[in-house]
Length: 252
Image (tube, rainbow, N blue to C red):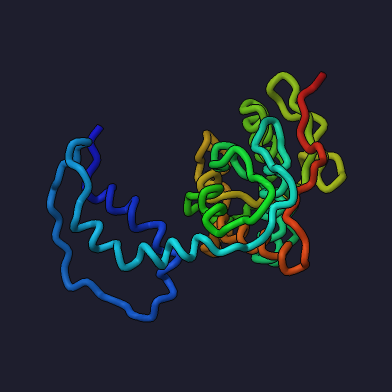
């Protein structure tokens, strides 16, 4: 498989953005020139690229070692639900409520967006959160009519469930049934405030029904929501633990 030089450059540079954004020096390019280069497996590494990144490598590496908390118990990724999913969606729900200043009814994280299978007891480094959520997806909210919400839920049920906060439901015949939101039965006539990623809201993972719904977007990364939420445990002198409760189950 061949990749353009531009794509390979982005893979190296993007993880640096969050670390380097606070630098005070700003450079305005006078012009941009492009050169088409084919990159093949036999091409080897680029010394020029390595030299360019070298000054930043140590800084980024040191930043990723920062301890932001202590994981109390094993948290695993699993379907239809898991303790890791509960922890992450609780973070999304809490941070969306804080960020947007409105009560968020339900928060989701698409299952494929969680990129580690488990987090073990012990130190949680900043780099661990980047591994957990490496994509620069944004935390958005939408106000979903009950009809759209139910369509979304049935689509999630077809996928055997996604991590969620603020909701419980059962998956039966690839449909979401017995839905409870905030402890109250789902009402198709109501509108629900839902926190999600911009990737999903823009139709990712076949969520086409969400594309027509207006998003509220403050440019805040899902990953930053996790970092803030996890760090708050340490500030309270607590270990990081997500609820072990069952939120999603398969019908008997």
